Image (cartoon, rainbow, N blue to C red; front, side, top):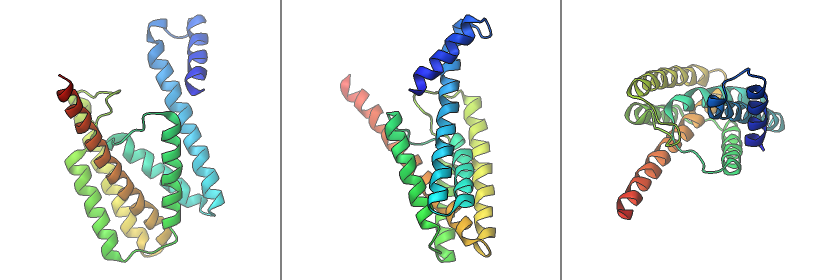
Length: 196
């Protein structure tokens, strides 16, 4: 559905000579990404309202998107699977916000997250390879955002615990997605080696 809508918009713009027809694939991908992001935001807001944690849901969305954009990690192989996993992640994060982890657990998760980002960032998506320059840029920005969010988690721990728990649980999930992304990437590399 999103792909078809993106194609329709792109074809219309190309027919009106607003965009170059040779760049249609780029525009289709851009529109798909935009519409997918809008749908993710709507899902996040609805779940935030249902859990009575709207501000927390918005913090999750901004944190998750801003960091994941640069760290990379696991990507589902279908749009439906992607949305189902995303919904599961939001529900998990919003559910955890009702719990207050001891401070040492918060520091442990933050340390795990920062080490993971430092060691693995960025994890390339096979469908969107990065140049060496892009990898350096993504690594720097990914680390910077990760540090900023980690500091925010520590600061908010003492007065708005649910925000801190949102950030920390999001960091934990991003770490897991990075590990899964690496394992799947290596697994696919081994499959290719075995096929030859």
